Image (cartoon, rainbow, N blue to C red; front, top):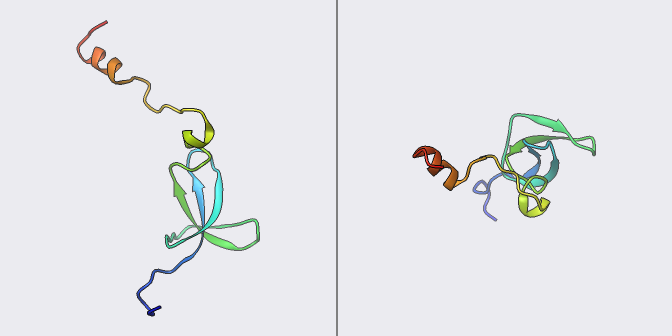
Length: 81
């Protein structure tokens, strides 16, 4: 491989912002925030919005952030019952 053209690949801790679930993986992402992992080493921390711990496909349950659907919003907008 040519030197100096590839991004720096290293171990990074990904932390789910909703549940606090964390996992160690390799990535080219970097962060100024670090955290000590179970093996005793410090790694950069990248916060993610969704991981396998909170995604409905993996959990089997749907979490709704928006209470009203399209029909409810339409009815509310035009004062329909």
